[in-house]
Picture 1: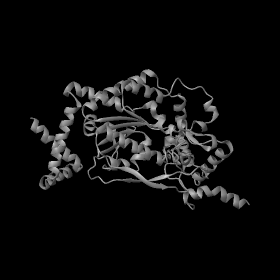
Picture 2 (picture 1 turned 90 degrees about the horizontal axis):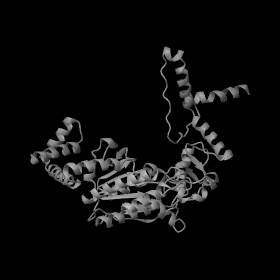
Picture 3 (picture 1 turned 90 degrees about the vertical axis):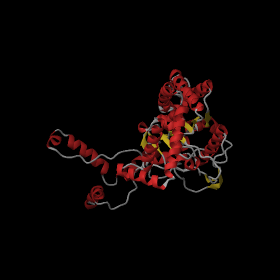
Length: 432
């Protein structure tokens, strides 16, 4: 018995030193502390011991399993989620607290702030429209608004705020005539008539079926607004698997439980796209939160848009043609707006308190300054069009293209960057 007890106590150390059992890593956003360096001063002032204790606790053997056991007990016995911001609703419907705050209006930003953001958005919309571009705002659905009946009573009994950010933005957008699609209200309207679930029980994002419906609506809006014929999109039947596909279990995954939470099945449309022949694929900038990953990550946007830019929370830019994301602070706003045909700004209800992520503020300053200096975005767009034509001329000339490629190699930059630099130099020389 004593030997067995000692073995059990030693197992975590053995597992940590020489892993015997394969464990599934914990899911979620966290960082493992680095092993601290030992110095004379850090030993005597106690900082090394404290740092090493923290490091050891996060790297002990069987930690993922022990965490899951602890989380499972909290969930099963106390109906509590030991995951940051996760709320367990009735019948094990899972929420994130920010969605409940948005539904109750506890994060309302105030009329004056939303008025100011909308006023700037109206100016940006006017400038972009004059330059032949399409600006569209999208209110993505929110789980708390879609499933208020499963929110715990302790939250529902608390007084609501003055109004919600969603209500305020709709009022101001109507006042200033800004274009928007309100998927948040639309999803609630078709909640009882939709063929398949629009929201998963254990996830926070819209379902694959909901994403397909929204994508179809988005395509029709852009086609009507710009008078173009985009790539056809649709679906040919549905997959109805026994297990959920990502991200329909994302909240529960973050809870790191031992056992799966029972849930209803989900439907996954078998999407189809037409060929590009005779179709228009506009250049797009989409400024959005994680809800757009369901469109961008599935490859839908790559089929629909030519230059496909996803400005994630207006912090980093993702483009399938790039080897790595870029910081939005590194992007020339005027140049990016001039290249884009469609600019979409989207947020789910939980993120409306920071909508539109500072993008409109920066675009407002850039376009206002450009209007004072150059007249309008249209003049800048014409410049970009001429530079793009020069780039095409270089690219189809084998000898010229080879010289640009060699210059790019010498400067250790990409061929596309060097091509743009050379074309810009040629355009500027012509102006002189």
